[in-house]
Length: 114
Length: 118
Image (tube, rainbow over all chains, first blue to last red; front, side):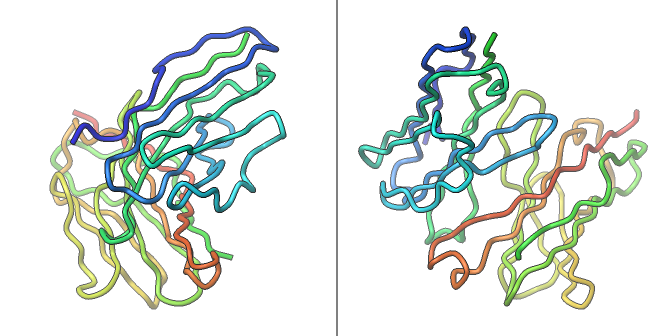
């Protein structure tokens, strides 16, 4: 298996622009998580899905952030409009309940908003 | 509330010496506990987990962790540290289903940077 795939790996954009991060979970996994990691705040859970349905989005910082999972093999995290304080590494992770709940992380997208 | 604490921001150990990275938890009911490692510019990587059974759990790369219910701890250990073990280590606890609406949710600690000195 190729593992969790994220694209792009790096994104540099200007303040006010729309940013879309993409994630392909491991085939057959039924949970998908979006995290953000910064030096100041550490690892934060933004939102997670079960069977493509958003379960808990309480970690989404503002209405500027939105996430979708149109099917079992694809999810997006969108920031519109982006701000410099959104600069961080964004991780996608997936897991399968049957396997004891451990999560498998993608390589992350490093977002820089100037 | 469910939480994990990693009391040390950084742990330094000489190569070849045993290492311990500490983790304590607070959770209602039986905990599901995890350790993850993050190498520079990489995503988190699962190391090992405790769900039930033997209190000593063995994982990848020679790491092990001991579950101690009375002390609510789940410390990560390795008998002999390698320079390549230098990384950021995260402890995590699964939120009990009854408190997460039947869904799985994991709370991560703040991470401990392990530096193995040659």
